[in-house]
Image (tube, rainbow over all chains, first blue to last red; front, top):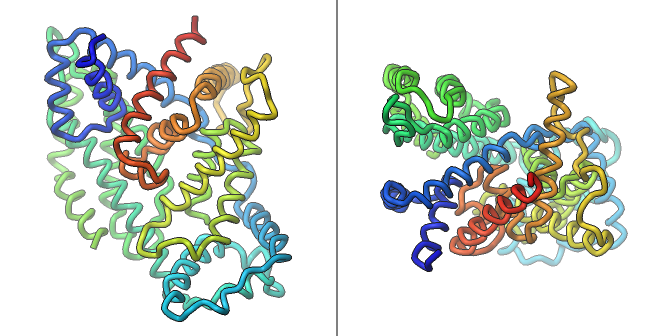
Length: 256
Length: 163
C-alpha cells in the first residue's frame, strides 16, 4: 500500500462513515470507479458498519424511571452540599451568563423534580437563582427546535442522495447501491422517536416529520443492492409530496 | 434532563458496555453539569457540552476499570448487560442479539479511548464530525484521522474474533 493509497484509504473510511464533504465524496467515488482494492475496502467497511448498526445497544433505554434518576442526581448534589460554593461574590457583569446557563440546566434537571420532592427546597435548590418560567420555556422551545431542525437536515441529506440516483451495484440488472442510505434511514427513524414535539413552535413541523418518516421507512426497507423500480417509487413519493422543498422550508423556519 | 438522559445513556452504554456503569455515568454527567454550570457558555448549545462531560466521564471510568481488571477479555461472557437492551420477540433472536453485542463489545474494548469515543459518537449517535470535534474539544482533522483508525482497528478486531 503506497502513501498515495493510504490517503485514499482514509477517504474510503470517511465515505463508509458518510462523513465526507460533497467535493471529497465525488472525487472519492470517481477514484473508486478505477480502484478495485478501494472498492473491496469500502465493501468490507460497510459490512462492518451494518454489523454495528444491528448492535442491540442502540435500542437500549435506562432501566430505571427518569424520576428515580432525578432522585439519584438530587441525592448526589445534596451530599456535595457539605462543601458549598458561593455565587454571592460574583460580579454583576458575570452574573447574567451564569443565570442563563443555570436556567438551562435547571430546565434539564427540574422537570420531574417537583413530583419527586414536593416538600422543602434543598440547599442545592436554594442556591439556584430564581429563573422566570418564561425564560425556561423559551430555552426548552429553542432546544426542541434545534433538535428538529438538525433531524430534518440529516433526513434531507439522505433523501437528496436517494433522489440523485446512487451508484450502480449491478449494471446488468439495473440495481443501485442503497446500503448506506438504508442504514442511515434506520438510524434516523430511531432518532425520530426522541424528538420533542410538544412545543407549539415545533408542533408545526409534525406533518413534515410524518411525511419524512414514511419515506425513510421505504428507504430503510430497501435491499442493499436495490431494484431500480423500488427506487423509482420512492423518487415519485418524494416528488409528489414535494418533500425536499417542504423540508427546506421547515428547517429554515425552525432555525429562525 | 428528560430530553438528554436517553441519549447520554446510549452513549455511555455504547462506550462502557455495562448497564449499571452507564446509568452511573448519566447520573454523574448531570451532577457535574449542575456543579459546573457557571463554566458553560450560554451562547453555545447544551448538547455538545453535556456530551463532552459524559464522554470524559466514560473515559475516566474505563481507565479506572482497566487498572483494576488486568484481563481485558471476558471469560465466557460479555460485560454488556442485556437487561439494558430492548425486548426481543423470540429467544433465538435474543441469543443472536446477545452474541452480536458480545462480539462488538470485545472489539470495541480493543480500541484506544479516543478512537472508541469518536466511533461511538459517529456510529451510535450519528453526530457529524464537526459536532464530535466540538463535543470532544479536538480538531476536525483529529476527528477524521481518529475515526479512520478506529474503523480499521475495529474491523481487524471483529475479523479476528470471527476467525
